Structures are given as structure tokens and as C-alpha cells.
Image (cartoon, rainbow, N blue to C red; front, side):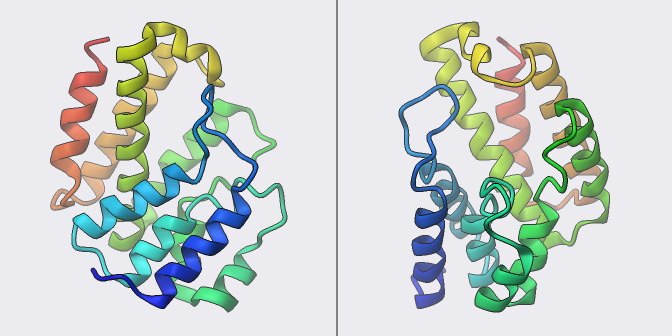
Length: 185
């Protein structure tokens, strides 16, 4: 995929939404994550709308109610809005385990495009976690809402659900490799 005005518009909007956020337990600006998800999707051969959805994937969930699906639909189209909505936790007030259970159950109902966005998101999060584990060891889990064993269980279940729902997913080999490396810790 080549650079487009729509992709730039998504980048600009994501930068604005995430402007004050940092990655968990780091000084890294949060925007690195959605931009990395967009790059993973571009490398996987995704089209413009899927890349845009990857860049915007956390804008609803992490904006504390400031960004709504309707806005994404108005500015970027229904297809992008649907993908972003598919990967958005719908009720952040629920306990961590409940939110993750509901998100996992939703994987089976996602389109291939939404599954690709979810896969790129999970892939980047696992890659980031692996790098943090190499540098900091298990102390990295002090920054998360759940302990190491629950995080590893969640990643294991997510990779299985993604594989069961779409075995031809082009990001599946990397997801499995990252999971295998993660479980060594």
C-alpha cells in the first residue's frame, strides 16, 4: 500500500487523540503503537481502509468518550468505523478479565479485515512486551492490569481464536512465533 491522503488524515487524527498518552510503564509516546499497527498492516498487503482502521484502532477505546463510532464513520467511512468498532472494548468500566473475555468471544464474529487489524494490534503488543521482558524481566508486569500468567493466558487464547476464525491469516505465523517466544519467559 502506498501513502494516501486518507492515511495521512488518520495519522493526524490519531496523533491528536493520543497526544498526551504514553505506552504502559514507559516514556514512549502512545502514538508509536497505532502507527506500528498501520505499518504491520501495510507490510501484510492490506488496503487503505484496513491500514486506516489500524491507525485508528484505539481512538474510540482510549479517548474517554471523546471519540465516537459515528465520528469515525463520518470522517473515514462505514467500513473503517466497523473495523475500529470490532476491535474496541465496548465497556471499559468492566473488570479487566470480563473485558478481555468479551473481546475474545467477539473474535469469532469479525470480518477478515477486522481480524487482520486485531492481529496486527496483538502482534505489535506481543513484540513490544517481548522487548520489555528482555530489558526489564518480569517487573514489566507491574504496569499491567493483570499478572503475568493472566497476560500469557490471554495471548494464548487470542492467537488460538484468531487461528480458529481465520486459519489463512497472513499474520498468524508471526503471532505464533511471538507467542512461543513469550511463553519462554
